Figure 1 (spheres, rainbow, N blue to C red):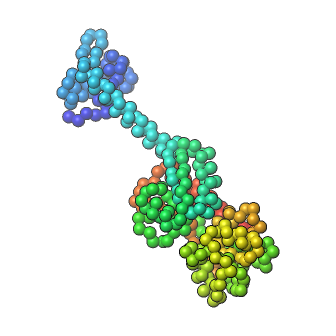
Figure 2 (figure 1 turned 30 degrees about the horizontal axis):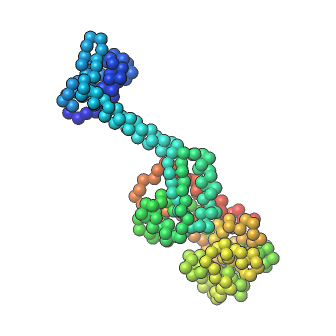
Figure 3 (figure 1 turned 45 degrees about the horizontal axis):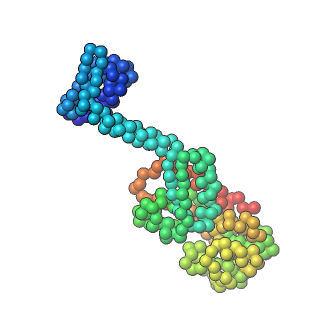
Length: 302
């Protein structure tokens, strides 16, 4: 006969209160039913748990030993249930999110601040890293999710679109492009500040230049978006960068203008391991994150 949790609860109640009557009242059950549970437990264990008198029941030596062990089991189970409820209600939990440095700086702080305000028991940790490092960290479960622009085909990875990111022209206030949207063909012979060729953004710029049939001869090639923005501010040229680059230049004298014909966009996505369950805390964070990502879309350009 298998031992049940109900049998253990009945035994512990009798052991604590000293009578079957009070134990039955606490457990909201009839006394005969409670007595039957204790008898079944004694049969399953093969030992006598109580010495019964007319007024009281007392634990046997075996009963005292079993009380200590079974009380810990019930306590641990109650704690596990409470922890699960806390996770479900987002009262606790931990999330680790990975993103490229600029995207992490542009989006994650405000999203994390909102999570802390609404769900103070949920901790959010950040890994700012290169795109290839992020994909591997997600695939190997080192992080719960990654934010960025990733290749469409990645084994073991689930993609959740968050927003569309469009390439934009960044120029100084005195530029001839300062007052209107820009056609790619207008960039012919314009000093262009680009990222190096190991950047996905640079590859998109090359595709656009090839599409409109103009040569791409960079005036400057840099590895970091912040460096490109500094060169633009110094009026050394214009740069084609993602929408979220505006968040890296709140105090710079740099303007962002839409590029058209063609409009080139890509998805900012959240990635996570495929086939893995999503915790309530992570599901909530995804919703918060999507809202903050979409604040950087071109609709709010001034």
